[in-house]
Image 1: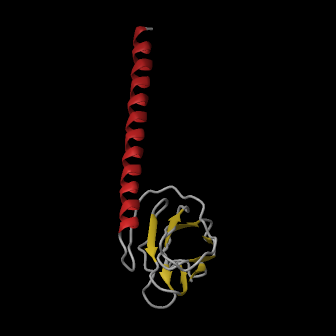
Image 2: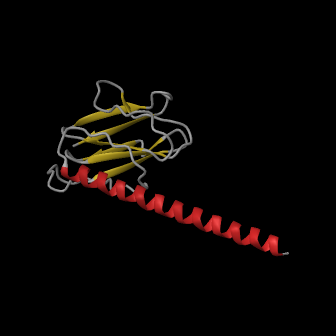
Image 3: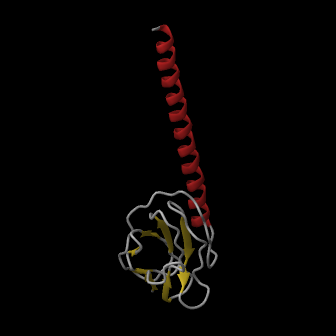
Length: 154
């Protein structure tokens, strides 16, 4: 009975240590995501590719004036082999962040030109792009070309 008690206590300790490790790892990933958000907010380049483990939030898709004084980060989920939303209207200077929720890899690839060109995103990974000029940007997923969507920048 003494040996079985040692095994039970050892098992509990191992599970507790594993839980602490996972919690610390998750906090570390959140900190690196926050750093990437800071970079997105400060960087005013035409495009920026960032891969991180950010949680997806709902997008603010409301239209307003074309001033870029308050750029917004809009979120698009890649889920069930579809981009959601499939059409998004944004302002010049706003960023869009795509997050792959599927267990298979997807890309964000321009139908024409090279404006959007992500690497293959595994589950939970994101791609971000800041739009510097007006226009309609149609894109697809390279491995799954039937997955189509567009961004309209006003």
